[in-house]
Length: 203
Ligand SMILES: O=c1[nH]c(=O)c2ncn([C@@H]3O[C@H](COP(=O)(O)OP(=O)(O)OP(=O)(O)O)[C@@H](O)[C@H]3O)c2[nH]1
Ligand SMILES: [Mg+2]
Image (cartoon, rainbow, N blue to C red; front, side, top):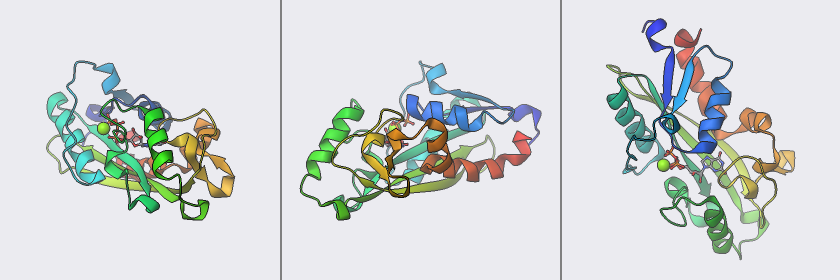
């Protein structure tokens, strides 16, 4: 892999919250980051896998084939113990195809209405795939442990962040600044692993 030809990467996501986090996490490095928000004509990719890793690979390889370039994708979600791991890979569409964060939160709170606080443990999971033309796609992952609150707190972040409590901080993910979230999140942990693998290209 020569350094020059890989100085740009496409993040295969249309999720604005993820896109912002990726742009920040890659900002210290000398690499141009673009997302599918820069390419609105790209068709939605069907996530037909049954694991986060499978879906991440599907997204990264599909875009890498279309653009003939290095592509990173993220498949992530919320795994709730009291719901036997749901919404899991269906987190974005938990309340329907519109991928409405507020509707997803309300559905989750409703389903967990009778679950006491000590049984509301959950974690965010993030699988990231790296597809480089002509090379085997690789995946890395990260998790972030927490608890589901009974009501929303905070306005930062996206998705389920306002009801996800980071216990040792006493704050929800949405009460953390983007800098604080990017130190502890599932996505940040996965990206740190990816960055060590990409060191050659980034430096
Ligand atoms: O509160 C949250 N903070 C996070 O940090 C986070 N990371 C993931 N999630 C949830 O999991 C879905 C991903 O599903 P997903 O990986 O299929 O992505 P998506 O469909 O939104 O976009 P794309 O990347 O596929 O284009 C998201 O929509 C969210 O509901 C999060 N919620
Ligand atoms: Mg998706």
